Image 1 (cartoon, rainbow, N blue to C red):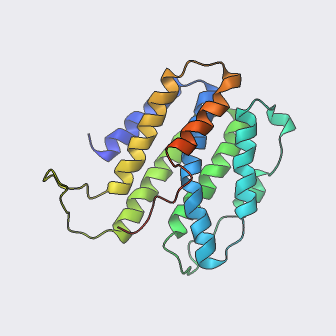
Image 2: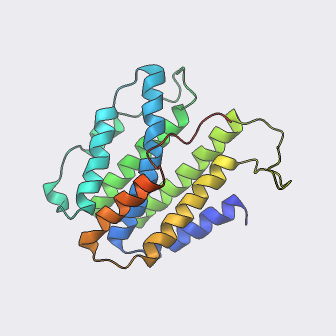
Length: 203
């Protein structure tokens, strides 16, 4: 199945998750997006890291059971100000993925307020588009082969991200714990799979 078809299938399936599991799904790919934002900061001196951490913490707090109305570390408007201008020249290969990370954070902040699944679907699309763009800008055109003699995917970052998303979805769909116990399980998976590591790097 092509990356585009996988993305559409996943976007259609995400509605099978309940609200708290959908939030957990969003937290998974925001966690994977954050390291690129921090790398952009290192490259350019950009600010906004504190705001992004606060947005992620706000999502985690809701996942841990805090009422949405009692958790207000950062507003969507404040989160949006962490967005770099794509038209400005930035000495970093991580501009597009940084914009992606901020958009995902803003979408999740909105999601915990209104529960609109289209915000998660939009984030899936943005994350996949950005992974593909990063690959096009940073990977050699010629395909190499692995030890089995099979060609590596020309879009390895996109394929990896889709695989993580599909795996996260299956994991959450099959997860049978009370919603009050979901946060530690999600945290364990986040750490176990290295979601806080910088994955988008030059090949």
